Image 1 (cartoon, one colour):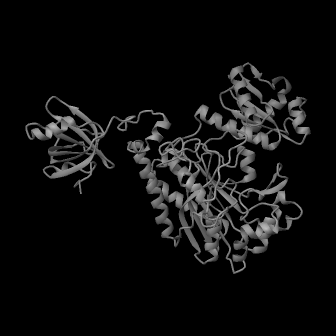
Image 2 (image 1 turned 30 degrees about the horizontal axis):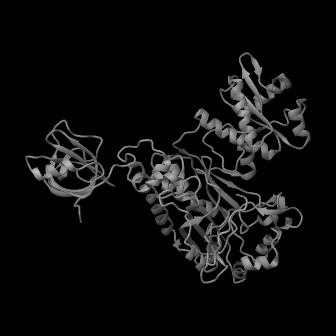
Image 3 (image 1 turned 90 degrees about the horizontal axis):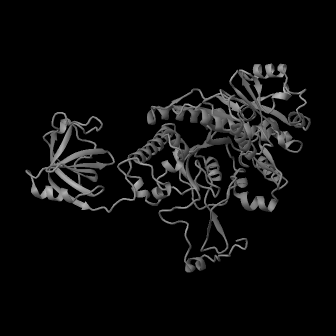
Length: 590
């Protein structure tokens, strides 16, 4: 070994010992005689001292050392001179008086500092990710991720779960995004798909009798990227036989309430996790992944304004739509430009516009003020809790548009007004999702989650008469405005699964080609089962207080799916394409 101790290990109890350290030079200071090097590794920093009176050769070597050189230093652990202790370092009571120093590798000038958390362009950081990961914050994120995954493994192992690896090369799975396809050399014209999740495989493991399965699964989805989404991501995939919904929720809630104090003790959470139906979440917060760290709920005020002659309100209500609002506390003084900017934002969400009432000391103002009477204002105040100084914002449209728009405005005000406690993790369960949604473009039904989700047993009779009213036995875990996990009780009867495929418009030949293996498996005594897939990346992002998941993934893609370090994706060699029987066709639209 190049070292006997780490750079974060030495304490006053080691004084008088001869030790060897190795690591990067974090900083170098030449005091005109003594040269001080702060030596850094993953565990910390130790100050080493090159004294020409002890070794001229060591001093000469130290004079050539620069930041980020990799060196090995051997010497005597000494107490720092009185008054020179560094309380900011765990090793701050000692220093290493070195009698041997070897440069193991030099470093050229870095494109950015790694010994400070300076603001650096993200594309530069990603290009030199191996340097970026040396930074203390990034090392801390990687360690946090390790601890989260280890806790998950240990927790589930103690409860009888078996970790089983499933194939990465498999068959296309309908999970709502595009697949990444891998051409087969041995079977020309055919393709594997990288799994969007191990959905079919974990269900087949239940048929196989594993009963309690999990894995830290790599998943792949070819979809547009954002701060909480990557083309490849990691989830804790788990499945259980002979369970109902509440059994799965209890297991996962128990895991999280035990894990968070162990890996991120500065975080607080509410327990037990509240439960909201999908309908309630949409009505109150405008989204199925609500941030519950603050109030500012949505209100349906169609009843209060039913007699309004304001054509914006009247038109929406007469068309079967809604008038909904939210109250922005202390924002009655917003200028005309600020309100116009909010209106533009509302239109970007799909609304036709935004009506406002400002409750000012001088009276009611705003674009809806002259259309709303005193009695209606009083009723609005009673219903919403609005007070003088507040701004009420209305959207009159379909329920879907009003919820989406006001839900987005709610989050806008959260960030603008600082309404959310960053150290609070407001977990919640969202349950009772619709089973199907109508795809207007394709003129057919699609599933809200995925086609392997079990419908509510009491709704099975509605397949032929009213698919829109069927609820599923699906559930999501949400936190602070993010979907953290999604799961469901699964279908385990062949006839029910086949009926789902038929309702989705799949022909018999397509059903057999894509899912024949699952349908056949269900004929061999498949047990009732259910599961969930909590995302690892988003969880670590929240625990680490990072703005996006790229900060907690060792080698992420950028916002457009590029690995700027390795320059991937990249063209394949003609010989490779020929071997795979693949030909590149130019896009005629370009």
